[in-house]
Image: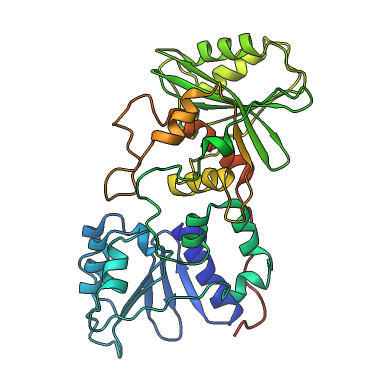
Length: 363
């Protein structure tokens, strides 16, 4: 993120404005030629490594993903004797009532100020993508939309994880459409090995079946899937956890095992839609809730009554008290099916919005 977002944008601004600079890529240090000032680009996960440098200023991106200790360490380094003004700043999206909320919003600390951007104020985005907020409104549930798009402080991590699920709205009898590909999404666990079978029609996701096997291998999961759906001519699309790309003790990966298995079947086409790394739990859950019931009022995720384990996930999976961490310890059978479905929803339904530096002034 530091390299791909912050540093890239910083260099674009310098280039557009003709500001002379030199970048030491190996050290991630930028030197301003006209002033001799040095700017260090550093990750802050290991906050103890932030000691020892005298700073004139610092800036943090995504502060809500940063520990309070990192902020305090940097604040303590604001002591460059040549600086005319010592300053630390940060930008963030609200993430519940965390330490950022307590320090900047709830408790007034002398010397601290906060600017809360209003909804639809981001002209940089709207100038490029006028319906940006409407797209998010169709993708996210009302709470997640309020937090991510409108910048509201909400306790979206309280209680049930899938708070938008309702049996009366999201559970109904579904039938296999022979024209649409089968979407098979897996969560790689030995006990239980869990997966869901779905189809996607337009923006609608229909979960037809679930496969839950105790103490089973990836090959055994493939055999069970093939037994239930022996020759679906419209093809199969595979989704799942990015960890399935890691080498196993047998010298192969879970996804390679699946490829090898399906080569021996009569399926006409098998495709894989697997991310290089897993999405954040917060965004994945937000998209699933948005499909269950979007902020716009649309429902685009339906589950067949036979999927009893997935329905139990939707109704029973909760966050740990006073945290944004999903409780996976309360019941070892829970979370696996909803995780598998989340990987499918993320790959098929995430919003991809492309925008970048603009040549005109925005304000």
